[in-house]
Amino acid sequence: MLHQASSFESQKRLEAVRPRLIAFARLHLRNATLAEDVVQEALLTAHEKANDFEGRSGYETWVFGILKYKILDGLRAQKRQGTWQPMNDDISDDLLDRLFQENGRWQPNARPSRWGEPDAVFENEHFWQVFDACMTALPDTIARVFSLRELMGLSTQEICKETGLKENNCWVILHRARLRLRTCIEHGWLQEEST
Amino acid sequence: MIMCQRATELMSQRLDRPLSWLERVSLRLHLSMCGACSQCNRQFDLLHQVGERHPAVNTHKKPSMK
Image (cartoon, rainbow over all chains, first blue to last red; front, side):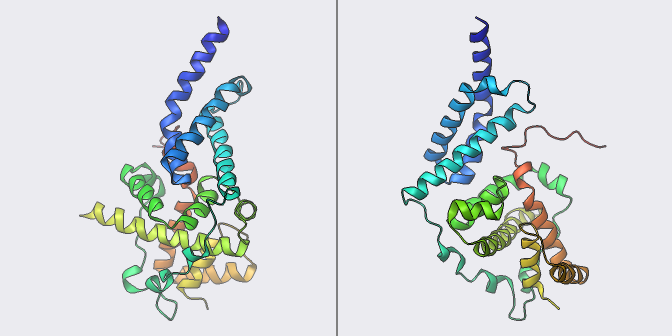
């Protein structure tokens, strides 16, 4: 009886986190079906291992930890099956020419402006809509490397192991990801906020 | 003297690896003179925090300090 009650509680808690798990997985895997699958597996694991959790703080942090493992498993599977290959093509574009003049200074129309205090930015719902849209707009390899680094919290060394990229390449890709995101966010967010 | 494009490389790599002494000094010097790069540097820092602050992950808002 007691066991049943706690199992029901655990299921209820998991259902409540589900939408956010899916949002997170989508951001990383860039595929709605795959995201659903991975979240389903994570929820199942969390449910089975609910007893392991007892005593620790931050139930949702624990569930997100499980999800991160599952996302990495998904990435490894995609790599094994050859459905995902890091593409160097994604970084041979004219991004740097659009942002910088030949002498290395910012193009006048690309100079970054002020975004305001980080806490205020993070509390702004519209900022996050624009952020998610800008993530989706990133070329595949750039988005994945950025997400492994900044959303999953892997080091660039770990990213090399997962993706087979050279660390030097990772740094180049992350530089581009950050430049692209900041440009996209500034266009989509600040300009709309001020009109 | 480094220019803006190189400065953005260093401010990005600063988040992924320790910079050398020379790199740190060049970046600091450039930032002290370039308003646009200082803004960019703040924005890279902010993007570096999205993992913790994204609404999908961040369930417990910090209590307001005010």
